[in-house]
Each structure stands twice: as structure tokens, then as C-alpha cells.
Amino acid sequence: MPPSMFGPKIHLRSTSIVLQAVIAVIANSGDKLVRQKREWILPPKPLTENIDYTEMEFIAKIRSDVETSDKIEYSLEGIGANQKPFNVFVVDPDTGFIRVTQKLDRELIDTYTVSDTGYKDGSDAEKKIDIRIKVVDENDNPPVFGEIKPGNVNELSIAGTSVMKITATDADESGNENSQIVYTILEQNPPHGMFDIKNDGTIFVKSAALDREVKHGLHPQSQ
Image (cartoon, rainbow, N blue to C red; front, top):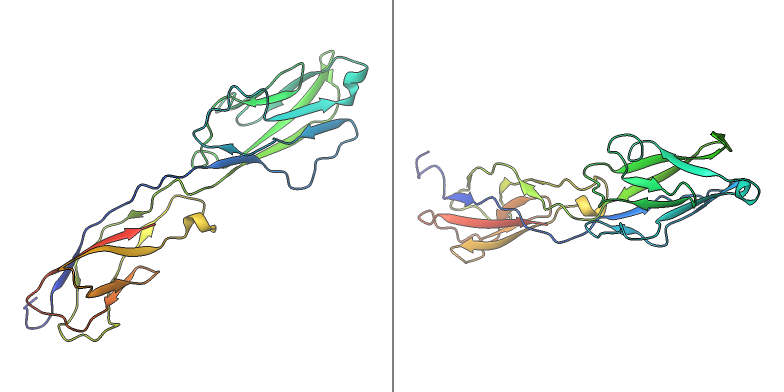
């Protein structure tokens, strides 16, 4: 459009930042599991993404009181056990110790529910008990900007005038603090602080001294 109708274009460069964070994986304790003939000992601490826990003796333990009089063989069933992805969690058939065999990623599976079964002489010794392991989200996914088009603002616009709005998306679990995105402007060119950005991604005029002959470039950041 002709310069007489509109002021300078605001050219924004899309960027994403690298955030160093972890995903904690814990067994969902909720109410304590209480069974007459079975006890589930909860993991002593959360399991953190990208840390190798495969050498730990166990992350949880199941036990049947029938063990006191008969030999019990333990097994796990469900997704992450005997269903795809296979053997993420395994149980020692003799001790009832449950181990994790690989690092966990919430973006792949956010909750595992496996069933523990105790067998005696090839038959169920007791009813199955469900063990729910929730992958708790931490901020391990950097926000990503979509397409950002140039914005326009009139030369004589007053401070507070909205110029445009940018939006970033986050793959972390929605509805918690890790998926909340905060916007900032890292750099402006020329470096006169003519623009600012709100928490919702709205870029607005901060200083009314805009010059039509100057093209402004901003470097936004989301985190």
C-alpha cells in the first residue's frame, strides 16, 4: 500500500528457544492401594526424563501374602508391559520387583496402566490389581511460533496502539503452568524501544515518536 496511507512495516523474525528441562515420571499414588492379600510399595522418588533408571533394583514392588505359604509368580499385563510398546515395565516373577527398562516421554504416552497378576501353580492366586503410572509433565518443549506476517501501524499512532498479535504453541501438557507462554521482545531495530509486547502476544506502540521513513524489526521470544 502507498506510504501515505500506512506507516512502517514491522518485520518480525520467527524464533523458538531451547529450554532445558525435564519430565518427571511418577507412579500416581492417589489414595493408597489397600488390598487384603496384596501390597504395592510406591516408588521412593519420581523418575526423571532422560535419566537412566534401568540399573535400579525396582521402582515399585508388589507382594502377595499368599507368598507366606505358597510360591507365587508375578506378571504384568497392559500397554507398556505385554502390549506395545512392549516391556517398558517388567516385573521379576519371583520377587515382584517392578523395573523400568527405558527412559519415558510424556509426549509419546502420558499414562501407563498395567495390571499385576499373581499366579500359583499356573492359576490366578488373586484378582488383578491395576497400577497406574502417570508421566508428569515438565517444561521440556520449547514454544514454537507459527507463520508471522509483517504488521503495519500509522505514523502518528499513540502509545498503546495495537500493531499485531503473534502466537506460539507449546506441546507440553495443556492446562498446567508448563504450557503457559510468556512473550518478550529480545531485540528491536532501531534499538529505541518503540514497541512492547503483552503477555498474550499483542505487540503495541510504546513510544508515539514513530517515523514513517524508518522500518522497524523486532526479535520476539516466547518461553
